[in-house]
Image 1 (cartoon, rainbow, N blue to C red):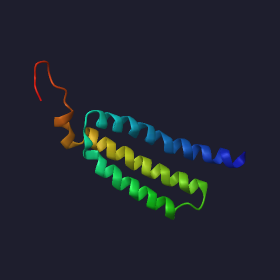
Image 2 (image 1 turned 180 degrees about the vertical axis):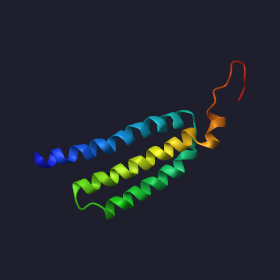
Image 3 (image 1 turned 135 degrees about the vertical axis):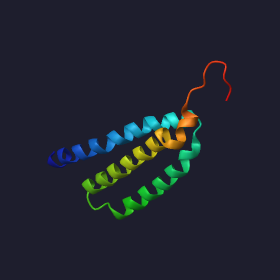
Length: 98
């Protein structure tokens, strides 16, 4: 019981950025904004490599997951609200064509 209670804050802290990034990523993919996919691929490769290097303790695995979930959130936020995303994210007015 002691071990599980020490892991819970790290797990919760790692899941919050993942949930927020999931909302942003679903928004990007629903709008067919697939420019984010190569960045996601590189991030997934880096995460897999980091897990092979940093897996000594469960807390270390959760810290690694938290870092990469924050990076995922930042990547999705950049593609959602970054400087180049403003032109494609504006909704079209009535009668206006893409």
